[in-house]
Length: 139
Image (cartoon, rainbow, N blue to C red; front, side, top):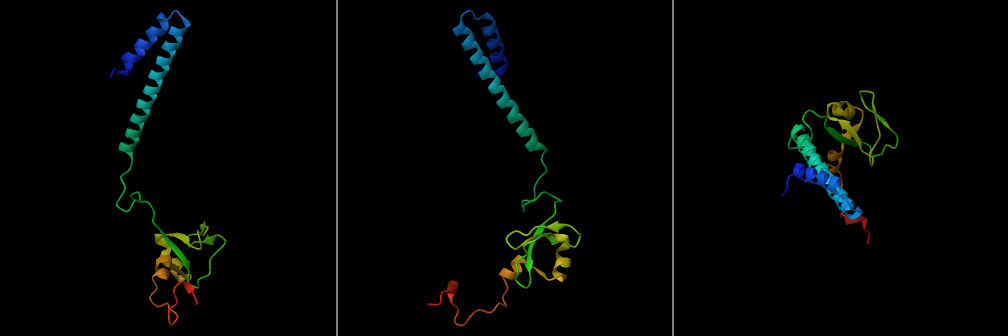
């Protein structure tokens, strides 16, 4: 493969030496092809540099030092529809009845009557009907 610099010089020389409209057109097309290849190379070099300069992630898929959010639901089972005030004063909109809470505020939210969403799903004390009817089918 011919290096881009050599191709660019050859394209410039062809543009200067072109006499007929067809030669000028072909020389311009080669120049545009060299330009596109050069832009691709610059973009891939920039992407490689950005990848090398990025902060490493931990195994949890979070940036090191980034806050971790715990999804919480109301203990009574009702779903909030408006913004919920967190202990630090910020307001958060619920997502499907769950509120994302920074990990350092989970204890304060628990005292306010909230539970971790996983605790509700895995609650072993929830009584089931006897006999248990799967999917609520009464038949």
